[in-house]
Image (cartoon, rainbow, N blue to C red; front, side, top):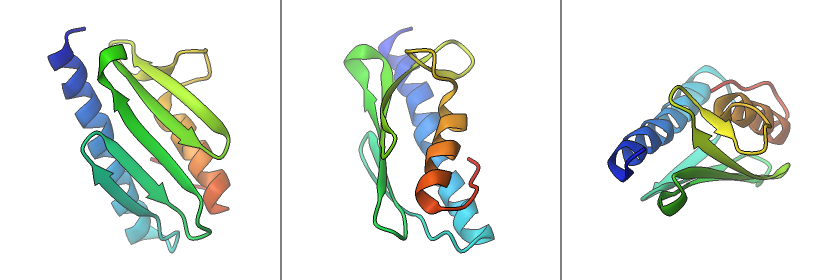
Length: 107
């Protein structure tokens, strides 16, 4: 994957996180505050906990930090997969966000 291809895929992922938060906030009272600065999106939940997602261009990875731990994802040509075999990015984001929000959430 070239740097340009990586940045295109990473931008799509970050935009999908932002639109997912907007949809969740419109459909529920979960009240997730999402802030984006460059290649990083920070989700802040009503209880003050956070999930941080940021790009790692030199490695062509996406990193996610949640209360559950830190995770690295690589694009496999179709989706972003955990580098240690822990599953797909958006499934995991939904799982960790649900844990931190105290309600089921789906991105």
